[in-house]
Image 1 (cartoon, rainbow, N blue to C red):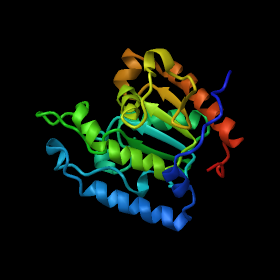
Image 2: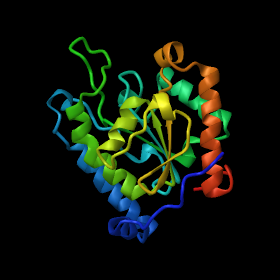
Image 3: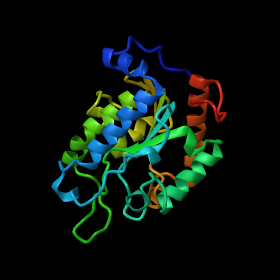
Image 4: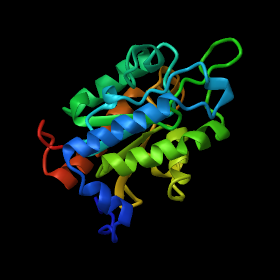
Amino acid sequence: MSWPNSPGPRAPETLVTMSLSATQKRQRFLALSAEAAACIRCPAMCARAAVLTELNGPVDARVMFIGEAPGRKGADRTRVPFSGDQSGRNFERFLESIGLARSQIFITSAALCNPRSASGANRRPSSSEIRNCSDFLTRTIDLIQPSVIVTLGTVALEALKLIHDHEFSLKNDAARIRRWHDRLLIPLYHPSPQVLITSRKEKAQLRDYQVVSKAIRKVTGSLLPDFR
């Protein structure tokens, strides 16, 4: 496997973030979390609560997973990304297949609140809702400073375009290691039951996660509990 070229110079704001102490970093994250909780930019989701707290993962994580949005029966209820529903159970199984634990990763989403249809069912977040959340995603990435970003589904991959443009797609780049904005990026399919049936079956997704394992080993040298 050929690896992306070495990263270029980091942006000044990134250098500032990297110089923060653990306490300062946590304080900034808590402030960002509070700001997200108070956000009312999306009229259709003002009754929902943003899923961005310390339950998302450690602020010193080297690996970040980005999903589409909290699920009605999942994170919107449990407050823990990818938990409490079948998508979460599939995600847990895929992580376990490469020996990765939630305590080692940070998980967020393109839209921080659960988008629902008029009937109360989950729906795909609109382009304006993703745009409204883009600032939170940008600042979360800048604060966490992950070496590896894994997007889960098309919505998450497209959300990164609002931060730093790219031409990647699931059709052409799924389970391939790419360079995005000074980081390794691995676009993957979403772990939802529907996707497993229609687009990317479980065996294929299990193989995809082996690429995540290789990327982590490339930047950290291991998959041990202390790789953060």
